Image (cartoon, rainbow, N blue to C red; front, side, top):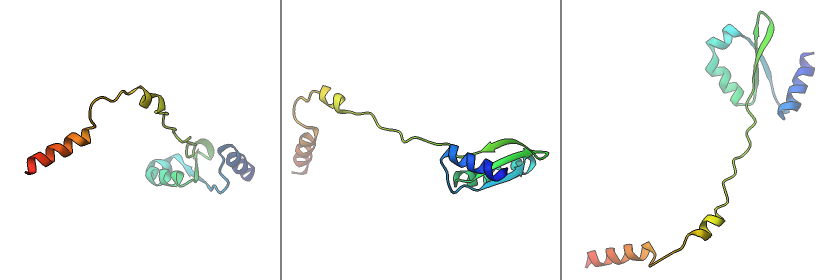
Length: 97
């Protein structure tokens, strides 16, 4: 049964090489940082209270964040005068000599 649960979890969460670790709530409290490192590495942690599963720690499935398209913004900006780089270069040259 545990094996079928792991297969189901692997399908749902899209992870094929996942190891499942069972820990008691007491052990989870004592070693939470280590357990979180294991979850971040791709493992799954099942917390039990008196042998009954009460919680499951899994790494969240994150979608890559796409940056907004700035083409419209760039088109709306109207350039006036000389580029700032020309003013900076001119100022540096005048201060040197």
